[in-house]
Image (cartoon, rainbow, N blue to C red):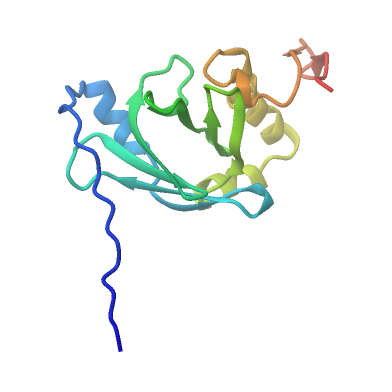
Length: 165
């Protein structure tokens, strides 16, 4: 019987990151592990075991090496500048995007905490979820993943605007 050792893919070596206190705060909020997504897809997030502040994100046999990018929206954003991949973690879902080609690789990815937020998304919870998460589609960081048009909250608390088709 012939035994074959498993193939271990070495992680590329990058320059050490100069992490700010703000970067460290965001790093603490990144949810690691296997995250199921829509259409049976999944994304695996791991902290780099050898390079603090870096993350390895795997999807469909592809591996991305990501770092935290600060946002003005409160979204957790990881980027692989070499491959143009972006991981966005919002309160109610996460998504993996290919910025170079302007498309989503995986959407509606939810860890257990995000599932709770999504399940609570009825009534005012749904409106607040929209305002806190989906409205950030107006920000360039998440515009590529936005699935609706421009909407605003009226004085009466209802959403109005144009829907994207």
